[in-house]
Image (cartoon, rainbow, N blue to C red; front, side, top):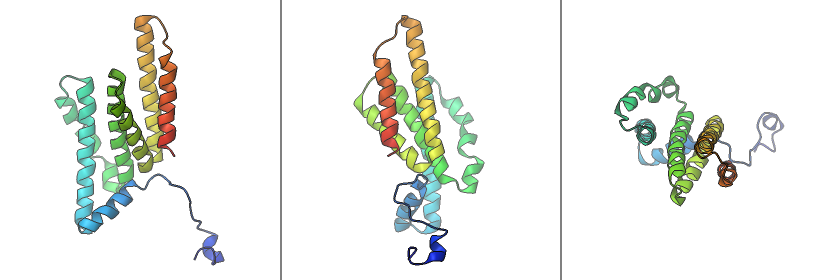
Length: 179
């Protein structure tokens, strides 16, 4: 239809690649098959908020012994103005960012393969949610790895060869997540 009409083809073209910012659209499409549109949006907001608080609780539990007060203080972060404007993709991206930070912190403590799979899946879902959050995730996880390396070098006074392998592994995860 677009190829035959010159007027429309001047303004629109078909994309043959996966562009981020589609996660909540497909999730709402799936929920509309089960519920009515009003209920499916409420279920989407419920999933968004519970996902945020679970991700925040996991991160706070991994870095603090008593995360209850910090979780209560993080409540305004989940209920922000972006939710009111309907920027669901950005907020789902933040939620997957929180989960990937939790997976990465646990992966640096103990090198288990399922943490690496979790990092990859959350990174790929972050890319599908929002591109800006994906770039922020790359910066945050690279910074966490850099501080871990600085801390290990400072404590042991030596540089290990696996540090370079960790940077390569993080780069490979982000490359696969952005395909």
